[in-house]
Length: 223
Image (cartoon, rainbow, N blue to C red; front, side, top):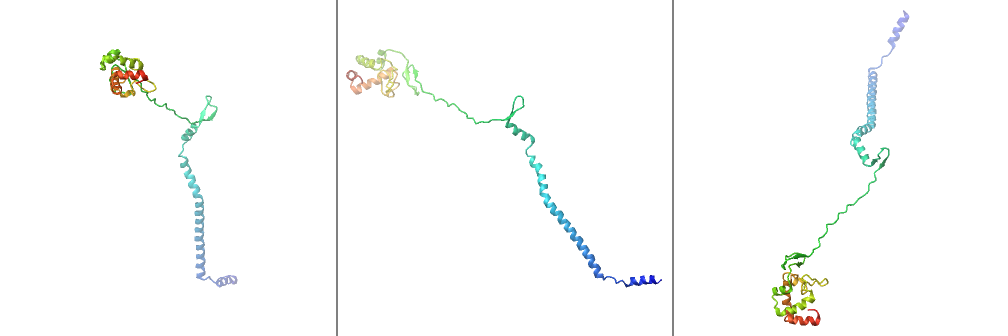
């Protein structure tokens, strides 16, 4: 009985904690919980910041690698490789430089043309005479008097041998009387009639007549 009363008295003697002390303890516990939560969240964020670049790089690597397919890589390697008939040996292809030579187009060389008459066609080359005839016919056609035919024959025989197409290789004189230059003969210098007609004007203009031209030639061996 006494012991029970003592216990009750002992309980009654316990002094209760103030209300402010209890609230402070609870607030401290709550603050520690919030701080712990944010600390854990910061650790997770920091770890994510460290891992994120690696993850991004790993995520991008297949996309970048996909730009070159296995086929294109094999094709590029094939361009530098050659395989023997047996297929056992593979060696790099030896590539060298090369040049292309194009033969230049030849430049045509003007060649003399032939004509059956003394008319000039305005071509680039001389018109060699192929019309035939005889000295008397040519002198008559050129209007040379028969009295002068002997003088003409003497000069022409020594200048060209009555070859209408005679040409001096060094001077370019042409025709029966070796007109120089050949281009001064009206018509065609190789036509015997044109050549003799021009020679009549030259003989009379320079020597007064065919007789005067003959006399000069016999003395100087040219006219």
